[in-house]
Length: 321
Image (cartoon, rainbow, N blue to C red; front, top):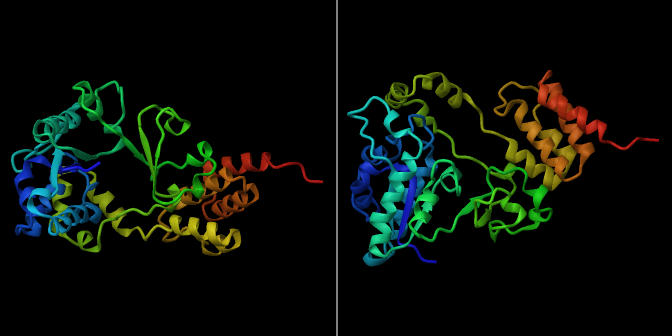
């Protein structure tokens, strides 16, 4: 299906005119452009990692090769907060506000003009029949046809529901409505982009970490920001995705060879190795999972979840003769 518009959660609708000019190829300064994702109703840096800016620039690049009447429009779906006149976003945090605004934008800018749109939003906005009407609920209430797609990025349990999913092509799009992969009845399809442990995530850049003006802006909006910011900037690159790939391609010994020997400078703490062991357990490799858990507890002694997982894994082993 061809779409005309892309509606995104990670942009302040106050800057729609600026975004229209940018994706059409007009000159917009970097300082002006970053207001789109930095000045949303979210006081924390969720949209500040590079992948969101890269998205807007990718649309601009695509439009450069399209005739004017076929160019994509990016519609900014976050409520129009003006931080120059407000010290907080409390008025936009009431239940449903961040769904009602994009629903109105879709009605006004897409449907009333007989256009089609791709909506890029977090799962919580796409659930059906929530206690507070979600974006999808509001659109379907007005007889709008909505096709919802869940991504596999944060779901570590897919192999429990679909044993052959590791053999699927990456990426794959599968219809899942009324199947066990749609256990909560919310989604029409699944976009499989690989095992959840193989997914890497965009992070704050070194430039942002050294930008005093940026740090001050975030601290003014989010009181706990400075401490959290320091922690984020000091974290080394996560290695969980790398360990998972090594395990799949080379096995346990190679994985243990790359796993941390001490907790110093390791970004994921005990949680990462626990996730790795749990994923290996799903595949029935209990001895391998036990070895990972034992390493985890040597590196992070006293980690309660890992201790519990190790006890359960050992208890499930068949009696040895």
